Length: 265
Image (cartoon, rainbow, N blue to C red; front, side, top):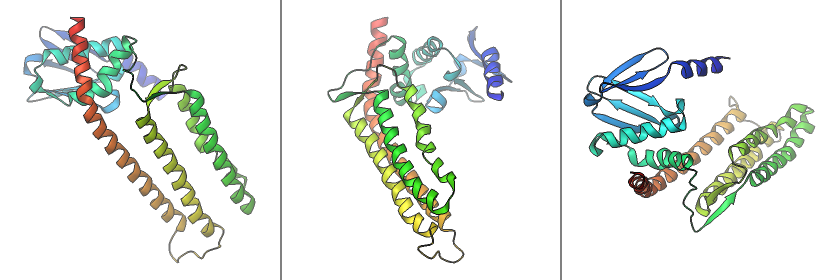
Protein backbone atom coordinates (compact mmCIF):
# COMPACT_ATOMS: atom_id res chain seq x y z
CA UNK A 1 0.00 0.00 0.00
CA UNK A 2 2.82 2.40 0.80
CA UNK A 3 4.43 1.77 -2.61
CA UNK A 4 1.08 2.29 -4.35
CA UNK A 5 0.43 5.51 -2.40
CA UNK A 6 3.91 6.88 -3.15
CA UNK A 7 3.49 6.05 -6.87
CA UNK A 8 0.16 7.89 -6.83
CA UNK A 9 1.80 10.99 -5.29
CA UNK A 10 4.58 10.92 -7.86
CA UNK A 11 2.14 10.62 -10.76
CA UNK A 12 -0.01 13.45 -9.39
CA UNK A 13 2.61 16.00 -8.31
CA UNK A 14 6.05 15.37 -9.84
CA UNK A 15 6.67 17.40 -12.99
CA UNK A 16 9.32 19.30 -14.95
CA UNK A 17 8.40 22.48 -16.81
CA UNK A 18 9.99 25.55 -18.39
CA UNK A 19 8.67 29.09 -18.05
CA UNK A 20 10.30 32.42 -18.91
CA UNK A 21 13.80 30.92 -18.88
CA UNK A 22 13.21 29.07 -15.63
CA UNK A 23 13.42 25.34 -14.98
CA UNK A 24 10.62 24.42 -12.57
CA UNK A 25 11.10 21.14 -10.69
CA UNK A 26 7.95 20.14 -8.86
CA UNK A 27 8.38 17.34 -6.34
CA UNK A 28 5.94 15.65 -3.99
CA UNK A 29 6.93 17.86 -1.05
CA UNK A 30 9.07 20.59 -2.63
CA UNK A 31 9.38 22.91 -5.59
CA UNK A 32 12.43 24.53 -7.15
CA UNK A 33 12.70 27.36 -9.67
CA UNK A 34 16.11 27.40 -11.29
CA UNK A 35 17.13 30.02 -13.83
CA UNK A 36 18.53 28.16 -16.85
CA UNK A 37 21.23 30.78 -17.35
CA UNK A 38 22.49 30.14 -13.79
CA UNK A 39 23.08 26.42 -14.35
CA UNK A 40 26.81 25.67 -14.25
CA UNK A 41 26.86 21.87 -14.45
CA UNK A 42 24.68 19.20 -16.02
CA UNK A 43 25.57 15.86 -14.44
CA UNK A 44 24.29 12.77 -16.21
CA UNK A 45 23.79 10.20 -13.47
CA UNK A 46 23.28 6.44 -13.95
CA UNK A 47 21.58 6.14 -10.56
CA UNK A 48 17.97 4.93 -10.38
CA UNK A 49 17.34 4.32 -14.11
CA UNK A 50 18.98 7.62 -14.99
CA UNK A 51 18.94 11.10 -13.52
CA UNK A 52 19.69 14.59 -14.84
CA UNK A 53 21.27 16.64 -12.05
CA UNK A 54 21.50 20.41 -12.59
CA UNK A 55 23.80 22.47 -10.40
CA UNK A 56 24.09 26.20 -9.87
CA UNK A 57 26.38 28.05 -7.49
CA UNK A 58 23.77 27.81 -4.72
CA UNK A 59 21.46 24.88 -5.36
CA UNK A 60 21.06 21.45 -6.92
CA UNK A 61 18.04 20.02 -8.73
CA UNK A 62 17.43 16.41 -9.70
CA UNK A 63 15.25 15.01 -12.47
CA UNK A 64 14.57 11.32 -11.98
CA UNK A 65 13.76 10.02 -15.45
CA UNK A 66 12.05 6.93 -14.02
CA UNK A 67 9.06 9.11 -13.09
CA UNK A 68 8.25 10.09 -16.68
CA UNK A 69 7.04 8.54 -19.91
CA UNK A 70 9.57 7.40 -22.48
CA UNK A 71 8.76 10.29 -24.83
CA UNK A 72 9.23 12.79 -22.01
CA UNK A 73 12.50 11.19 -20.92
CA UNK A 74 13.87 11.37 -24.43
CA UNK A 75 12.75 14.98 -24.91
CA UNK A 76 14.43 16.11 -21.68
CA UNK A 77 17.66 14.28 -22.51
CA UNK A 78 17.77 15.91 -25.93
CA UNK A 79 16.95 19.33 -24.49
CA UNK A 80 19.68 19.39 -21.84
CA UNK A 81 22.20 17.75 -24.17
CA UNK A 82 21.63 20.35 -26.90
CA UNK A 83 20.99 23.42 -24.71
CA UNK A 84 24.24 23.40 -22.71
CA UNK A 85 27.82 23.40 -23.99
CA UNK A 86 29.95 20.26 -23.81
CA UNK A 87 32.25 21.61 -21.08
CA UNK A 88 29.29 21.99 -18.70
CA UNK A 89 28.23 18.34 -18.99
CA UNK A 90 29.68 15.50 -16.93
CA UNK A 91 29.49 11.73 -17.50
CA UNK A 92 27.59 12.06 -20.77
CA UNK A 93 29.46 9.25 -22.55
CA UNK A 94 28.47 6.54 -20.07
CA UNK A 95 24.95 7.93 -19.70
CA UNK A 96 24.56 7.93 -23.47
CA UNK A 97 25.81 4.34 -23.73
CA UNK A 98 23.74 2.86 -20.90
CA UNK A 99 20.57 4.97 -20.87
CA UNK A 100 20.08 7.59 -23.59
CA UNK A 101 20.89 5.55 -26.70
CA UNK A 102 19.02 2.38 -25.60
CA UNK A 103 16.03 4.59 -24.72
CA UNK A 104 16.00 6.22 -28.15
CA UNK A 105 16.44 2.90 -29.93
CA UNK A 106 13.50 1.42 -28.02
CA UNK A 107 11.41 4.50 -28.77
CA UNK A 108 12.16 4.18 -32.49
CA UNK A 109 11.81 0.37 -32.39
CA UNK A 110 15.37 0.22 -33.62
CA UNK A 111 17.15 -3.03 -32.74
CA UNK A 112 20.62 -3.01 -31.29
CA UNK A 113 23.38 -2.90 -33.88
CA UNK A 114 24.17 -6.57 -34.60
CA UNK A 115 27.59 -7.88 -33.67
CA UNK A 116 29.46 -10.67 -35.50
CA UNK A 117 29.30 -13.00 -32.49
CA UNK A 118 25.63 -12.37 -31.56
CA UNK A 119 23.27 -15.17 -30.56
CA UNK A 120 19.74 -15.16 -29.17
CA UNK A 121 19.13 -15.31 -25.41
CA UNK A 122 15.59 -16.62 -24.83
CA UNK A 123 13.24 -17.35 -21.95
CA UNK A 124 13.68 -21.05 -22.69
CA UNK A 125 17.41 -20.76 -22.11
CA UNK A 126 16.83 -18.98 -18.78
CA UNK A 127 14.36 -21.71 -17.75
CA UNK A 128 17.02 -24.32 -18.44
CA UNK A 129 19.51 -22.56 -16.16
CA UNK A 130 16.97 -22.26 -13.33
CA UNK A 131 16.04 -25.94 -13.63
CA UNK A 132 19.70 -26.95 -13.39
CA UNK A 133 20.34 -24.81 -10.29
CA UNK A 134 17.08 -25.88 -8.63
CA UNK A 135 17.82 -29.57 -9.28
CA UNK A 136 21.32 -29.37 -7.85
CA UNK A 137 20.05 -27.48 -4.81
CA UNK A 138 17.25 -30.02 -4.29
CA UNK A 139 19.70 -32.92 -4.38
CA UNK A 140 21.98 -31.19 -1.89
CA UNK A 141 19.08 -30.41 0.46
CA UNK A 142 18.08 -34.09 0.79
CA UNK A 143 21.10 -35.03 2.92
CA UNK A 144 20.63 -32.46 5.74
CA UNK A 145 16.83 -32.98 5.66
CA UNK A 146 17.30 -36.74 6.16
CA UNK A 147 20.12 -36.45 8.72
CA UNK A 148 18.42 -33.85 10.93
CA UNK A 149 14.88 -35.04 10.19
CA UNK A 150 13.87 -31.45 9.46
CA UNK A 151 11.78 -30.74 6.42
CA UNK A 152 12.84 -27.08 6.29
CA UNK A 153 16.04 -28.03 4.46
CA UNK A 154 13.94 -29.20 1.51
CA UNK A 155 12.94 -25.56 0.98
CA UNK A 156 16.42 -24.64 -0.27
CA UNK A 157 15.42 -24.97 -3.97
CA UNK A 158 13.14 -21.96 -3.44
CA UNK A 159 16.23 -19.73 -3.61
CA UNK A 160 17.14 -20.49 -7.25
CA UNK A 161 13.44 -20.69 -8.18
CA UNK A 162 13.11 -17.02 -7.17
CA UNK A 163 15.33 -16.20 -10.13
CA UNK A 164 12.74 -17.75 -12.44
CA UNK A 165 10.74 -14.51 -12.44
CA UNK A 166 13.65 -12.82 -14.24
CA UNK A 167 12.55 -14.67 -17.38
CA UNK A 168 9.70 -12.18 -17.80
CA UNK A 169 12.17 -9.35 -18.26
CA UNK A 170 13.29 -11.11 -21.46
CA UNK A 171 11.10 -10.36 -24.52
CA UNK A 172 9.32 -13.35 -26.04
CA UNK A 173 11.36 -12.96 -29.22
CA UNK A 174 14.58 -13.07 -27.19
CA UNK A 175 17.50 -10.68 -26.74
CA UNK A 176 20.60 -10.62 -28.95
CA UNK A 177 23.64 -11.18 -26.75
CA UNK A 178 27.26 -11.19 -27.83
CA UNK A 179 29.45 -14.19 -27.12
CA UNK A 180 31.67 -12.09 -24.85
CA UNK A 181 28.68 -11.01 -22.73
CA UNK A 182 27.50 -14.61 -22.58
CA UNK A 183 30.97 -15.74 -21.53
CA UNK A 184 30.89 -13.29 -18.62
CA UNK A 185 27.42 -14.51 -17.63
CA UNK A 186 28.50 -18.15 -17.76
CA UNK A 187 31.62 -17.43 -15.74
CA UNK A 188 29.51 -15.73 -13.06
CA UNK A 189 27.02 -18.62 -13.00
CA UNK A 190 29.74 -21.27 -12.73
CA UNK A 191 31.54 -19.34 -10.02
CA UNK A 192 28.34 -18.98 -7.97
CA UNK A 193 27.61 -22.70 -8.32
CA UNK A 194 31.14 -23.89 -7.51
CA UNK A 195 31.52 -21.37 -4.67
CA UNK A 196 28.23 -22.52 -3.15
CA UNK A 197 29.22 -26.19 -3.38
CA UNK A 198 32.54 -25.35 -1.74
CA UNK A 199 30.63 -23.67 1.10
CA UNK A 200 28.53 -26.80 1.62
CA UNK A 201 31.55 -29.13 1.51
CA UNK A 202 33.24 -27.13 4.24
CA UNK A 203 30.11 -26.43 6.29
CA UNK A 204 28.33 -29.79 6.35
CA UNK A 205 31.09 -31.78 8.17
CA UNK A 206 30.87 -29.29 11.05
CA UNK A 207 27.06 -29.30 10.89
CA UNK A 208 26.99 -33.11 11.05
CA UNK A 209 29.59 -32.99 13.85
CA UNK A 210 32.01 -35.06 11.79
CA UNK A 211 34.66 -32.44 12.56
CA UNK A 212 35.04 -30.69 15.92
CA UNK A 213 34.20 -26.99 15.84
CA UNK A 214 36.79 -24.61 17.34
CA UNK A 215 35.83 -23.29 20.74
CA UNK A 216 34.10 -19.89 20.97
CA UNK A 217 33.76 -19.71 17.16
CA UNK A 218 30.49 -19.92 15.26
CA UNK A 219 31.58 -22.07 12.33
CA UNK A 220 28.43 -21.47 10.32
CA UNK A 221 28.61 -17.68 10.53
CA UNK A 222 32.36 -17.66 9.92
CA UNK A 223 32.11 -19.78 6.79
CA UNK A 224 29.14 -17.74 5.57
CA UNK A 225 31.08 -14.51 6.11
CA UNK A 226 34.00 -15.85 4.06
CA UNK A 227 31.59 -17.07 1.37
CA UNK A 228 29.93 -13.65 1.15
CA UNK A 229 33.28 -11.89 1.03
CA UNK A 230 34.39 -14.08 -1.88
CA UNK A 231 31.09 -13.56 -3.68
CA UNK A 232 31.13 -9.79 -3.34
CA UNK A 233 34.80 -9.64 -4.35
CA UNK A 234 33.91 -11.56 -7.51
CA UNK A 235 31.02 -9.18 -8.20
CA UNK A 236 33.35 -6.22 -7.69
CA UNK A 237 35.81 -7.61 -10.23
CA UNK A 238 33.00 -8.27 -12.71
CA UNK A 239 31.61 -4.75 -12.31
CA UNK A 240 35.06 -3.24 -12.75
CA UNK A 241 35.57 -5.24 -15.94
CA UNK A 242 32.12 -4.28 -17.25
CA UNK A 243 32.77 -0.63 -16.42
CA UNK A 244 36.01 -0.67 -18.38
CA UNK A 245 34.23 -2.22 -21.36
CA UNK A 246 31.45 0.37 -21.11
CA UNK A 247 34.05 3.15 -21.21
CA UNK A 248 35.43 1.68 -24.42
CA UNK A 249 32.00 1.21 -26.03
CA UNK A 250 30.67 4.60 -24.88
CA UNK A 251 32.58 6.50 -27.57
CA UNK A 252 30.81 4.52 -30.30
CA UNK A 253 27.46 5.10 -28.59
CA UNK A 254 28.04 8.87 -28.53
CA UNK A 255 28.86 8.81 -32.23
CA UNK A 256 25.67 6.85 -32.95
CA UNK A 257 23.64 9.29 -30.84
CA UNK A 258 25.04 12.32 -32.66
CA UNK A 259 24.55 10.70 -36.05
CA UNK A 260 20.92 10.00 -35.17
CA UNK A 261 20.36 13.59 -34.06
CA UNK A 262 21.88 14.90 -37.27
CA UNK A 263 19.68 12.68 -39.42
CA UNK A 264 16.55 13.77 -37.56
CA UNK A 265 17.30 17.52 -37.87
